[in-house]
Each structure stands twice: as C-alpha cells, then as structure tokens.
Image 1: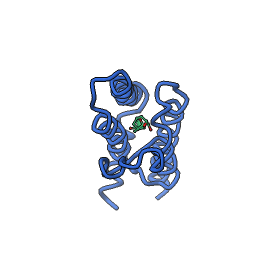
Image 2: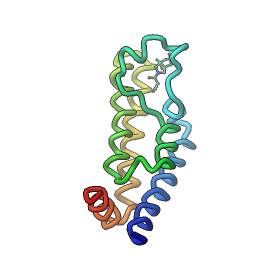
Image 3: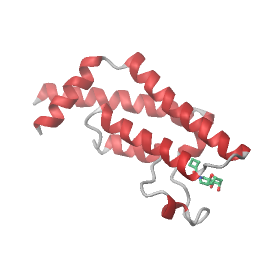
Length: 130
Ligand SMILES: O=C(C1CCC1)N1C[C@@H]2C[C@H]3C[C@@H](O)[C@@H](O)[C@]2(C1)O3
C-alpha cells in the first residue's frame, strides 16, 4: 500500500542519515567495518554475531530494518561485541568500551531528538501485519 511504503521509506531515510553521522565520527572508526578474521583469528570464535556500521548501511538498503527496534538490535550487537571482546583493564580495551557506550548513547539520543514517535509506531504495525 502506498502510505505503508512511504512510512518505510521515511524510516530508511532516517536510519541512513543517522548511520552516516556515526560513520563520519572519528571515535567510531573501529566500528565502521567488519573485524578482519585474518588480523584477529579468534574473533569469530569469541563473538557469535559480528556487526559493524557498513553492514548496517547495506541492511538498510536491503530493507532488512522494518522498525527502529530492529536497527537498535544491531547497534546493541556492536556495543555488546566490543565489551565482550575487549574486556581488559588496559588503555586500548577501556577506550574501545568507552567508544562503544558513546556510540550507543549517540544513537538513542538522535532517535529521541529526531524521530517522530508515530513513525516507529506505524512501522511496528506494518511489520506485525506482514
Ligand atoms: O573488537 C574489535 C573492534 C573494536 C570494536 C570492533 N577488534 C578486535 C581486535 C582487538 C583490538 C585490537 C586490534 O587487534 C583490533 O583488530 C581489534 C578490533 O581491536
């Protein structure tokens, strides 16, 4: 239906704009691309569900996110994976964890400030009806 596709398109536009801001933020450089298996051989045995911002951008374009909630699930994966794989009390791990929190907090702040409530409500109704 026309209105439904318009709502889903508005969600994609918002999620692209949000994700682009994260990709451009120098703090989040480590989160922009998948962790390289060759450089980090044990990564995929420790982290079951890798996620990164470039993967999320392609998921937006593949229309994999029907709701903000679906998008936030992948943001939480980036956050949790970073905490899980970088748990130590050394400067590098602590910096990664601090940046993972900053990423998660920036996402929630932008959603609260910029997304009209009824867009998310309508997207969830569309998703349930499909
Ligand atoms: O967890 C991550 C990324 C940070 C968020 C995703 N990595 C795992 C490796 C451990 C640590 C040091 C380097 O070995 C570098 O390759 C990684 C990348 O950081």
